[in-house]
Amino acid sequence: DTAVSQTPKYLVTQMGNDKSIKCEQNLGHDTMYWYKQDSKKFLKIMFSYNNKELIINETVPNRFSPKSPDKAHLNLHINSLELGDSAVYFCASSQAGTVNTEAFFGQGTRLTVV
Amino acid sequence: AQKVTQAQTEISVVEKEDVTLDCVYETRDTTYYLFWYKQPPSGELVFLIRRNSFDEQNEISGRYSWNFQKSTSSFNFTITASQVVDSAVYFCALRVYNQGGKLIFGQGTELSVKP
Image (cartoon, each protein chain N blue to C red):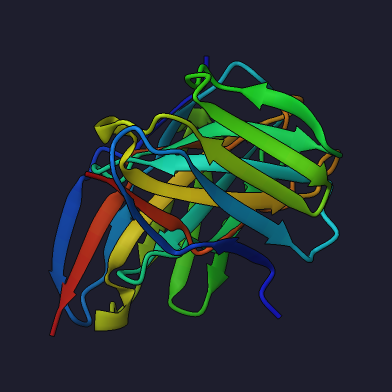
């Protein structure tokens, strides 16, 4: 029944490692997003995909690479992890073209880089 | 550029008090949408309400009410008779038409309701 699900919920890893976060939505939405929430709780968009096409890339380091195999999935791969990447990453989805619709968020992935 | 400001970083009230969370937004666009989300201690983001720029009608849902005023670019949120379960971080967000659906969030207001 989960609308937007992302895995894992917690991720602890060492600096320099590469890791991925997976996201899936079963709402039939055509647009998916990644947001980053920093230690001060500030939420900022990172990427947006519409029907597998990248439409927003908000000056995110190229160590972060989103991949959308289909419109129901948007994964986030992070290379050469740094301490500053520690944050909570939220996946979300909405229906584009109908911007009045709300975005539905996954439960978040807390990434800790040590 | 668009911006959302939630000037109240933290608010602490005692149960049954009424509390208003302020939200001020900036945009030059005439078509935009405003949202409130709740983030309880468990961490998920829960949608509460959306409002479009052409609809200034206030809304009430149970103990929650929202006051949208374009003249002051504000979209304030009031909780009546607050309860401990209302303790959370509340985010106001702006979405502008034709920008890929991205949400621009305010800094959040952490509400603590004490018994």
